[in-house]
Image (cartoon, rainbow, N blue to C red; front, side, top):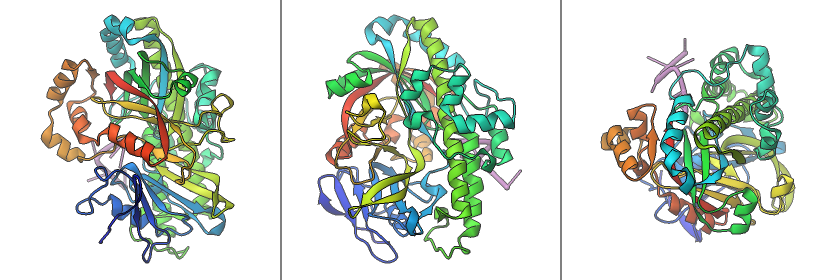
Length: 474
DNA sequence: ATGTCC
């Protein structure tokens, strides 16, 4: 397919609509970040998404966009619920409610320095990670799981895993509404019973970081951040449970495409009308899996707090928790008319502007926190939602891969990477050498450039830059 | 991402 991105503004390119696209594509990027039209399927996926029934305004790609299952990672697509708009599991991804949580420590990097190795050892000992394996909290059975799938982070807090204040700093207060656990299959439940409080693998991590730079002191202070401060960033998702929910519902929707008369250019875009039986079933199961992901991050928070208390004599306050793999029913103006939309954000973060009514009270003046994990060798960012975002209040979620995992393994040895990172002052507690090598900083786009493009495109503004001190790798 | 294939 010939796809030529046309510049149409700073950090903004247009993919012109042509049949069977229903809307154009819009890619937010600098020329350097723009995926090539040769050998990169991400832009083709942006075009494919633009064909979905009910899609409005445009098929969007964030500056960290890269190839994914059906939809690109870093893709945003909104469909009109009341005009036969569809929901697609591929628009959320296999790791439902994968997301990021940032904690702020009441200690700075200088006083922590001498105790950092011991702290990393303890975190390495107590944070469950890697493929399979157990978590910090084993549930008793389906009945308890159903309560967790409805209550999310709040259910974990009710059981002593955290404090009520944590929930004020979680997207949706820690639980997405509309979860129906009866629509989560038995296999998904069984996979999830022993994985609450575990990182998983791939790009998931728990990092000890320090605030390196502050760009907006007032917003940083409102988020509880100051220069030199130690933080903990947790990136993980809904493990085997979310994966199973996605698999189960992709199969159902693949089989129901014909019944709804929907044709898609790629079977990985399997979908159904939001208001249909399979559409509603997916959204209710997805919400349940999303809440599992939130509870998972809540349990890992408790592990980090225990380690910080014992090994550093320090406490951890929740800055914010965001999910970047989700579909949500939201109201946005389209052509001047408020519409109920199903907003798919796959590798994209909610970025509500200042003053938005859905923001928790103490953050309403500032905007929705946007957490942008980078790589273990570079930096991560805290941003905040900006006014004038036309991508349904969405922003970038990370650096974005440029090397496939296979390419990374050809170029990088895990042991060598560990030595490189530790010689630069980043302590590493990996779960496997292979997994570490796949996540080499060189495998990712330049996160500083992604943040510049995100700001330049008007999606979000930078608040603070965080640098890694130690990483517990999934 | 994922008991890296039911």
